Image 1 (cartoon, helix red, strand yellow):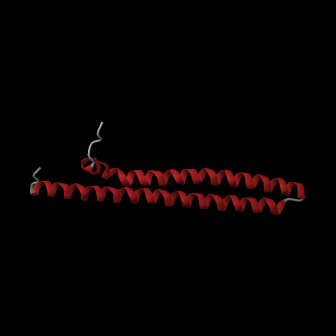
Image 2 (tube, rainbow, N blue to C red; image 1 turned 180 degrees about the horizontal axis):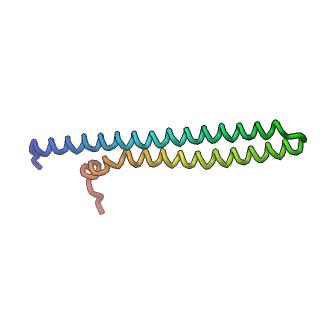
Length: 114
């Protein structure tokens, strides 16, 4: 198999294009992840602030315990939901970052013997 200079240039261009595409994808995904963390932090702060305000106005221990239980359940549910969402964003980041290189990997991977 003989390679020409044009083949090497084309391969270099493909690798460069794949790297640029991966960098853009990484940047966009990273911004989405940062925004999701920011949104979660803001929501958590607002929920905690609301809880403390309600707790300050409670007159009985039973009502305080009920409010605490409700807050703990809501906080946990929100955490699990946001953790799954952010985990999905990380998964998408990995897939999108790898995607531009799939074609190059396929070129250099020998076909499987049957």
